Length: 266
Image 1 (cartoon, rainbow, N blue to C red):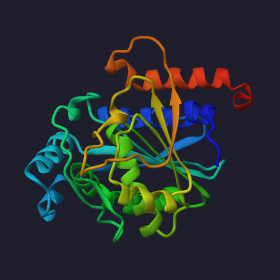
Image 2 (cartoon, helix red, strand yellow):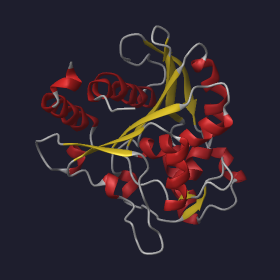
Image 3 (cartoon, one colour):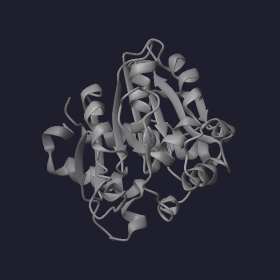
Image 4 (cartoon, one colour):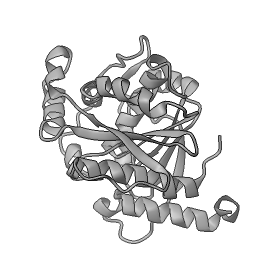
């Protein structure tokens, strides 16, 4: 499947923006691309942390800090006309707050046996919302033959962790197709290999000078890697990290890419 930058800019990226909208105000209907409608909000349940016994102290503190103040992490919905369902996952409240205490501890990917090692904190965070993904996604996918899974920043990492779980454990939904923006490296090589074999369509949009996609660092003994195919963009403008990591910058980068690829924009 080829990457369509216009679809990414005009449809997928606004879905992520809508996820931030419902995070800030769950009672307001989000602004969605034409034809798309919300079917449910996905909430995290921090009390589930008590059932996860192998989290390090740092990882547990991270999950409590990110999920403890607000539980709305994502929204699901569909476009009935195009038979397309979606899951869109937000990042953190401020784009780089979670980087300040970034840990590199890993744990096994628990939703699928023998599927490699991933970032411990992000796995713990996904597990607090996993039950709500399983409970709400089938209704959104009813009558659909496509499923978009997307996220930005930390939400991109959570989208990656959700994809194998959806593909293997929720049988009534289409195969997930990922497009993420500014996501970090989610796991080690032993996770990346089975992920890429299972998930046929996974595009990572990466803006020039955005540092988040270069984290966690690939260190000896902990070689964090990316999944899928990288799509490089250059938003131009300031090289300030807050700007380069923002969705506005990613929109500008996709617009620039479209302008250099007239065939894609047709």
